[in-house]
Length: 334
Ligand SMILES: Cc1cc2nc3c(=O)[nH]c(=O)nc-3n(C[C@H](O)[C@H](O)[C@H](O)COP(=O)(O)O)c2cc1C
Image (cartoon, rainbow, N blue to C red; front, side, top):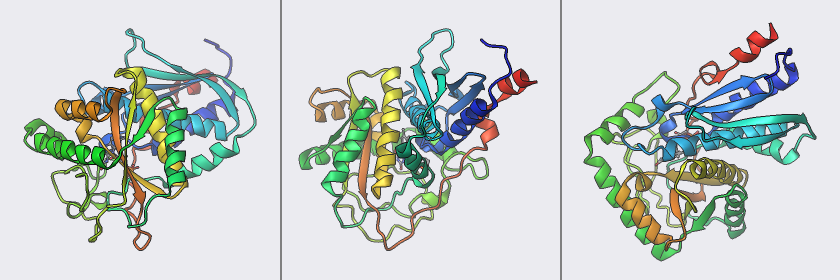
């Protein structure tokens, strides 16, 4: 490790990229990440206290969420004109360390990344039914390609597979509603006003929207008006890959971010559905939907948002100081 005065432009860029990654989606808005800015690298650590111990004991969703944040930080750095190497880390001696961006060098600012950074600031989860207008096929293709470029696959489900998914999601909903620990965990993350984490009532539907595949029952009504729409035109995709372990979950999170930001750019609304992956039995049903092609990570609903109504407000975030640790560069700089 170098003891020289850190390059201010570099450490500022790293801190800003880490702050920008705060816009990333995370399960129940847990934001389970912590960034460490070093003189010559940026480290991503998972925060186990914000992992869902009841819904996600194996760490699939917490790692997916961190992967989404990693992709956000990568894009933010590329947009500012930095080239770097991504090390995805699995160190039993430091299990919280997930990734390191290193080997940073000045490069041309990437215009595509600059556009994607703008999408980070407008992307959000809109749980209302989608409009009656179908998602254009080229848009679905672009979203699928964006996921594939990050090493995960997005299988678009046909009508029969959507019915199988609907049955599995309904089963998962019943299992979760009957589990007191899961109910308690959900109640915790839906009643955290003023903390910058969790889901405020403004982003949760005031009543269950009419959908082919049931969305998550958050256990309490929100105040987001949902209207009478039925998302018949919604497209359902299953994000999956070859392995069911930490490195592939991290990459799947990066793929989720890439797919969702592409969707945002194309005006397509996306909602992840993770209940069906949280419950062991229904996760196995999804494996059958994939006919053995791989392991399911997350279900994604895509559609065009109803243009007649304003979408939900943005879900709050933790203050940057709580997620970005710059102490190593402050002390090294004197
Ligand atoms: C791994 C993962 C799983 C999620 N699962 C669900 C879900 O089952 N239902 C849902 O409505 N939203 C789900 N979300 C969306 C989050 O609740 C949302 O990203 C978070 O509250 C932040 O809000 P934003 O996306 O509007 O910025 C999930 C997000 C991620 C990253």
